[in-house]
Image 1 (cartoon, rainbow, N blue to C red):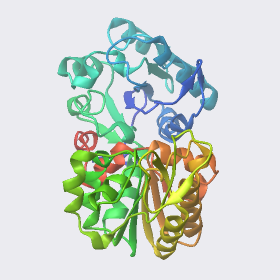
Image 2 (cartoon, rainbow, N blue to C red; image 1 turned 180 degrees about the horizontal axis):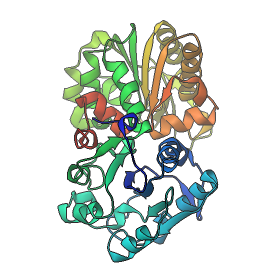
Image 3 (cartoon, rainbow, N blue to C red; image 1 turned 180 degrees about the vertical axis):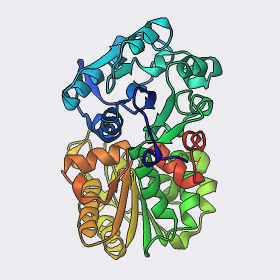
Length: 385
């Protein structure tokens, strides 16, 4: 796979860059521009060498329909501010109108296309759509690790049509840091997995169980493990179809909660703690004793991967488990442990506590990082090779 340090003369070359500008937008305003900022080193590097950049990204799930609230225009405006130069925007995704804009571009100019998912063929990996985008550029760059687990045109079918294609700086960094977890990690190697459902994590649990010394399980999916052991979980979330699957996992490497915080609902204003959950209640966070056990294990760790919150941390009543894990990870990072965190909610918790700079590496990919750990590659990466 070629990386940008191998690129040579790009002056006046048209470069199609698949970025990830899938950012939260509320009432037309971007509320978190992290993903846009992460792409800037690659954009600046190519602009400064005189390339003409055609940026493409998805936003949300419009399912092939044009939805004004999912337009990328606010992203073009924000990138203009960050780059301190005009970023052109095209409401069209391909065709003569886009070609005309590109013909008028000068060295270092940037064009952002409208939401790729407005095109009906994008999520179907449609070859005809790939050919239309191929006509726009000479070189392809993938800077969207977080979308590279999808077999979508802009990350999969399209790069296959280019003879000259590269991994952007962010994609390269993601691969390097996540690979570091899997290839000769310093031990003890811990994984902390949370989130709602076992079905989202069962593949990565099976992959990590062979590599990790311990896996700490929290979040809603812990209740499927509890149910498999015959513990009462009340109305807590349950992946019933995975109970038998969970029973087959080796118990010596998995550490489950020994207590949880439960309440009437995820919006409850008060909670109780216990080793089981009463019938009329549901669990929404790991308990105090579990927090202490998890912290003790984390302090021993030399390599640690975290994906998924420990509870419904959006409600401060059930936020302690997630926040305590974030704080202790920042602490061990500063003492030399190699820590990697990924997943939207996990990153949100870390940022809320202003701990992002203290973690060794914060991945932009949730599902992508899990699939990369599970399979060792992604469709978007294979298309670059």
